[in-house]
Image 1 (spheres, helix red, strand yellow):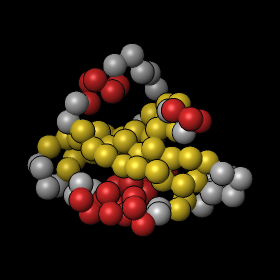
Image 2 (cartoon, one colour):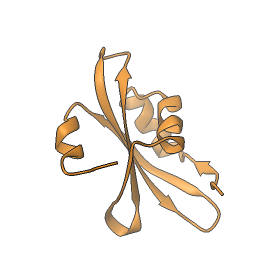
Image 3 (tube, helix red, strand yellow):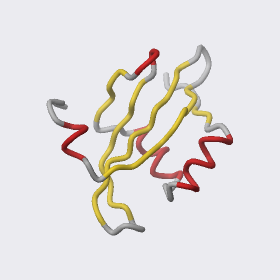
Length: 91
């Protein structure tokens, strides 16, 4: 069972500041290419996508904490350093 996702106001501000489409975040959470363990028990959801603003392929990294009743998105960022983050990972 998938838990509901909550995006706090500070994370919504991150999306605006970093020019990241909320739909891309939701798609990454629903259909990640990779999920790895992050710091302090957090999960990092990653997915490649074509960034319309930059006109190139980017990697979206969504850092989330899981609570008993929901997944809380802590922060989100995109990077062009795709190989750096995917090196050594396999599907």
